[in-house]
Image 1 (cartoon, rainbow, N blue to C red):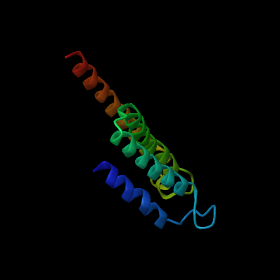
Image 2 (cartoon, rainbow, N blue to C red):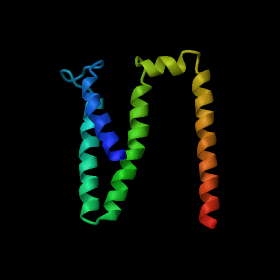
Image 3 (cartoon, rainbow, N blue to C red):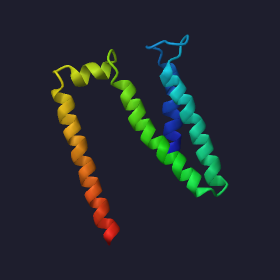
Length: 116
């Protein structure tokens, strides 16, 4: 399910042409191509029984899809930058606090289950 949604999201990014750098394309399109290639390599790895490679590719894809694309959306001049930092950074501070709290709770839950 997740792979299917990632394919749809990556392909839909080619409909975005707000920030043109290389003709109608930008760095986000390069990231979309990398995402599609990574998905294919990850699926091939698991079909060949290479669980270690599959796990590494999928976890890396998940982390970078969130972190890297999140960073792209927060670049100055982008809409999300204006939304989050419009009030002088208060929204960003609240969001960072919520994210840090969520990570802390997840780590505590993980620790509790790893001991059991």
